[in-house]
Amino acid sequence: MVAVLTRIFGMHNLALAEDVVQDAFCRALEVWAFRGVPENPSAWLMTAAKHRALDVLRREKTARTCEPELSKWLQSEWTLASEVEEMFTHDAIKDDQLRMMFSCCHPQLAEEAQVMLMLHILCGFGIGEVASAFVTSYTAVEKRIPRAKKVLAGSKRLFDTRASSEFSARLPAVHRALYLLFNEGYHGASAESAVRAELCQEAMRLAALLLQHPLGATPASYALSALMCLDKARLPARLDAEGKLNPLSDQDRSLWDQALVGEGLQLLELSAKGPDLTEYHIEAAIAAVHATAPSIQQTDWEKIVPLYDTLMSIRPSPIVALNRAIAIGQREGPERGLEALRAITDSERLSNYPFYHAAFGESELQSDRPAKAREHFSVALRLSRNPMERQFFEQRLNVCR
Amino acid sequence: MSDFTFLYRGRDTNASPEQMQKTMERWRAWFKQLGENGHLKDIGHPLENTGKVVKGKQKFVTDGPFAETKDVVGGFTLIQARDLEHAVELSKGCPILEVGGSVEVRPIQALNM
Image (tube, rainbow over all chains, first blue to last red; front, top):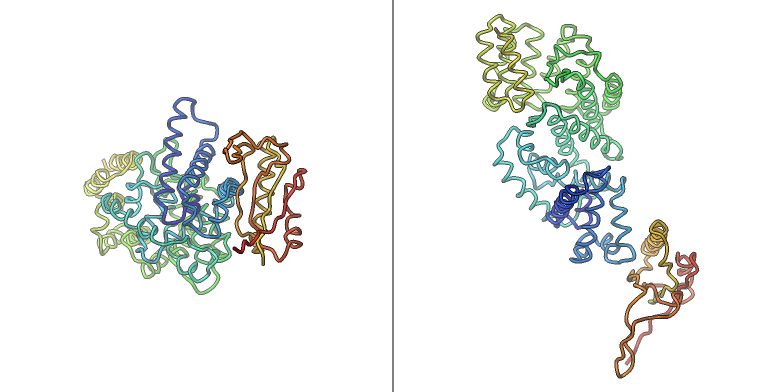
């Protein structure tokens, strides 16, 4: 909604667009309290926002300051209503979201700030959710987002998705944002649930939007979509019947969505064009090995470890190092896994990440040192960010008895 | 290029909301086309059918314009065209003609005083 409204009011009126959305939500709360929630709440909100936008345009004449081509139609009563109507149609919203995705990736903003902005404006992430997606503090994000918005508001026009060189330059940041969005859904730190499929769905939808654009359908875009499909395919087994987190080793693989696996493998094949090798290619390749393995024991760890090595050389991060260490443990036994875990540089950045401590716990457990494993799982439990994680670590703790 | 005014008469104001929307879509498409070809100087506005008429030195104010609906000016646009003939040609695409209305094409007069 903010994306559409920003196109209407102009980028420098981002705050106004957000106000209109806020207004629509407030009206919804008032009206729905009396009449109950309508059958199609999102359509209701869209209509409310649309009416509000018309009011604002008529009263404040903000249209004058946005794109001249557009403002011409917004200034006349002949076309104002139908023009706004048009902008709220399905196709136009798709375009606006793509445009907004790229607008957020403003070159004056650090990559991280771009992504934060996208998650915040386009995906409705609260400050807390953005902070957890970035493994950073609430206050840091609270400061950065308004600053980033100011930069956006300073740019007079929205990103033109037809300009090819700018498009290509900004594409990597867009990929990164979608990747983070997907991960937030998959490994989510939300208070209510460990997995939020709707966030994954959202990321996949936006990624598919990219593939529909002639300039967006690059090998990296295909690789990213492949990665999402292959990971998403495993989601049905990630939670058990009681909604508890289920580790890869215990998952019922018959629940994996084979249609999505197929789609992912196909997309991975499409990504294998040209010389570009991105982290998405590697991660999708790793996901493909998992998705096609009949069990954890029969997984081809020989393939996976070198893929993690390559990933460390393309985009090193403590989380990648952590996963690499786990893979080494699978290939060469828990003692070697522990060595690899201890060898992680920058590990202080993982000190608040519960699964870092859980990885130590699993290795100690496999090495038959339940007391040590207990210590690690206790730390993980203390750091758990939602009830699912808590239950999961409690269950692991029980195993250590 | 000279400037002309299109005065629209006979807008169907009793149409159902669906019909209205369809008609407005047609207007919009027509305006877009005029705009793309560089003929739209000022798109203007539609006008309500009611209002007041102020008349004479006494400045009599009456409700109005009580004429037959089909005679009331329902909107205006400023057009750029080569000559009157060209402007008339352009006016033939106006959706109001489909619903029995009319377009009055008037050259803008240059007042040299």
